[in-house]
Length: 101
Image (cartoon, rainbow, N blue to C red; front, side, top):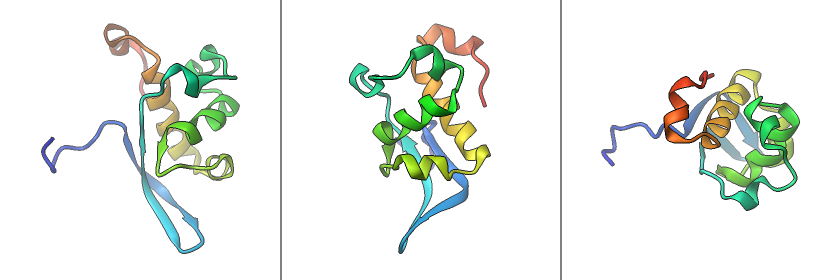
């Protein structure tokens, strides 16, 4: 991949996360395997339910977020991450019809 190309699964945060001395300015999501979705209803993820997203994001984020990090996200950042997460659940031909955040 060309260095100039942006990863579509990376979100530049409007409001960076600060953890002690570390500042997280962007988050890349990794397409989950079924095990990362355990304990969550897939329909809730598709509807971008905050509780479902809060459980799954720590399992698929790089750098790894905690549930507390997710709870403290700016709503605009959470919406972007939720849209990418929900998009992972769709087949390729269905993504064109799915509304993006």
